View 1 (cartoon, rainbow, N blue to C red):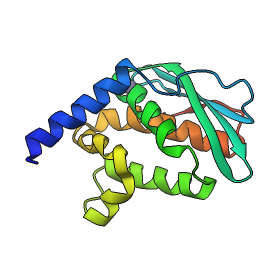
View 2: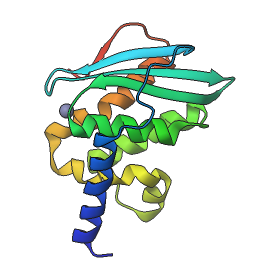
View 3: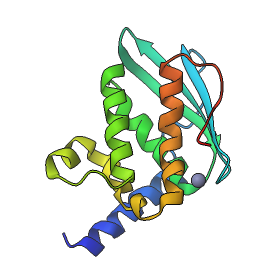
View 4: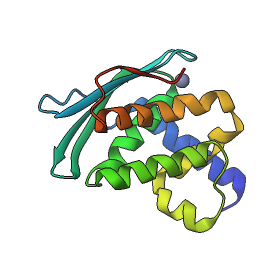
Length: 152
Ligand code: ZN
């Protein structure tokens, strides 16, 4: 695939998740939850997590935000199902490196899977906070913080 084709595909995936966000609901029996906001863009997100031991059994979100933050939250909930807390934190670090343009090699990219659709975000620094907001909120929830997190 050429680069422009790849970019179109990425756009399509992001649009699809913006229009039809996956796991977009409150999780009534969530053991962990947190709220996050990105004042710069006005994105707000709430993440709900149900654990089974050390494994994330279910993760959902609610909120209102721009297309990047919504698509990022949607893809995050899909990819985290069945992951351990350690794996989730590792993915967040990799995702952060991706959107800040620090990660380039193929081995690294393979581990990110679908999250690669956000690789273009590194060209728009102001969008990095939109893309990482759901992840910051997830981390706060996993760490049991009950204070809302802010990207600012
Ligand atoms: Zn945003």
